[in-house]
Image (cartoon, rainbow, N blue to C red; front, side):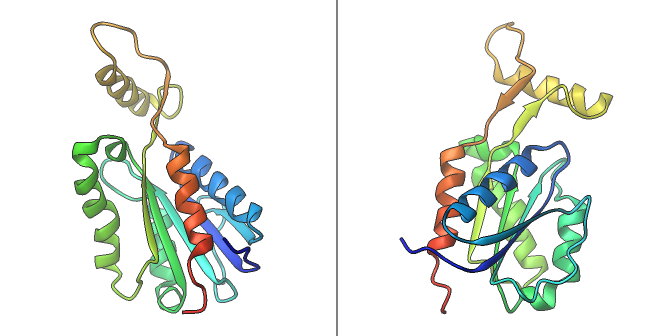
Length: 185
């Protein structure tokens, strides 16, 4: 494993914080390997210029089958430059934690984006589980999260307010693989 002295941008769209936490963890891992990493929450800040980055990691939460508008806008606005860069994309969604739905989720949430933006050829695509947190969001979101949580518990047990379905080891391995990718292609 080699250390890298590359500039990396990790940017994300997160609705309720799960994708933000994944992005923060990816950033920590890349920095621990020697990368100079900028982390941008696309809801709070726009990506102005990406030409100086060697690798751009773009993540999005999935809700109601859709990427966040901020993450998609970032891809759309920078598609020309992204076509000349090493790009990795990832999503955080509930389907990723359900083995029978992973292939569909990969097709619908990752491969569809690469189809919609054919000029971008990701070096890696990550599909990560999500976080059910019935304490976050508006009334409708909380109600949906409570129903999801209830569907995951057996019998008539009361579901916990938070069920974390993210596989942090899988995320670590994926982020480290980004570091090990040959940058001199």
